[in-house]
Length: 263
Length: 279
Image 1 (tube, rainbow over the protein chains, first blue to last red):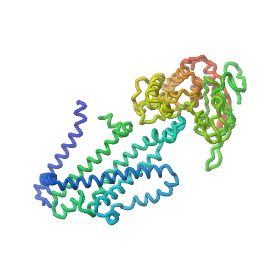
Image 2: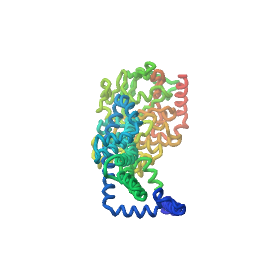
Image 3: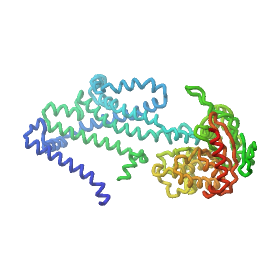
Image 4: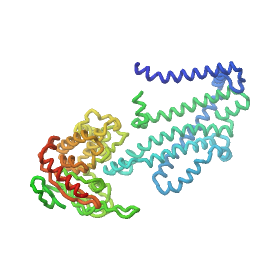
């Protein structure tokens, strides 16, 4: 079997499976005469999605959600790295803050969203804040883990080579924390999208989360599914962007390297 | 401390530094580790002079403090008492290390400790990069060293693509890249299989001859210690002390066949007996 075919086959199989699942959905819904209010057939969703994509309003809402997610995520990356490094480097800070961090972590932060709406208003700010807070924890905790996981042998090498603090930071610490940061970012971007949408559910009149609410209120089930499709695509694109950073930033890492080997 | 020579039988003992310029002098070094269970005396009153161009092997069973001694010589661990002098300059000043003296050292650790995000060339060139040498110069130097350790074709490889023996060769090249006056090696081949280890010993001999480096080589393998060393220093544990120093008068370059000669056998037997005698 040629390598091209062998590489392409899993993709082909995935595609085929999706097509089969959609076909089964279509056939079953039609055969059993399910109300389109409960579960519309894929063809109806596709039609409705097509209509929606022709309306500029849909694109406006998509852009709003994307911006909230990206802003929130960016804030989470910056603050997550800063706090993670600080706590990882200063031992007494970690012992002091760890119980608080664990405490905050187990609080279902989504339950706090109404509070943020009260504090930051119905505009984009409250959603950005929710997205940032949800994405912050996985990023900060991964960076913390990365800072604590520095290899003692590598430290010895840097010390035996008279490396300055800055040199050790640039040649060892930054690079060794990078895989952890990227792992945190992978989780973080998904959390940021969830944060933005939940924020939109609960307040305001913009974004895909708001569209979910309005389609639901109008009993527009095909429209609701359409929004879900747009949301999924948005999530997939953002996730793929973060994921592809790995190939640029840590081409040496096992997770990237193994992929390169088997194509 | 006794000083024996394998040439004379029965073995005689002499005391004092070896002939030639002293490259590294360990004088009165003691190390006490403070733990929750109390103090552990790791090293007591270590005296060791190594001449320029000499290869000294340090052997001893696990826990005899040989690695601790090497870490003190490498400037990674401060001695409780005493000091290490390298070409007349003290390495330790109080609790802190004199970085201008550290510049003269090259250290090879038990693990290769290569940085996985740099390719082989950048790993070898790292000491020069830290010293501010420009990219072209340090890459040229690294390529020379890569050839020296016999890995010419692996310049762009990442450490994870190399075998254990190859990684250790890269680590040796890295240690050599800033032209150290003294090469310190801490059981560098402990994790390698016997055949690779023998090959690496031949490599070390060749590299040392080519670079005229002074070497302190820590190992727990008697044959390795004898094969590489001009002298074998034997340490005993609790507390770590130098028990005995044995001269190795075997012609260089030594091939692996030297291990089958009676002189080699006598030396190994003698060292084995005195190591077992500790029990």
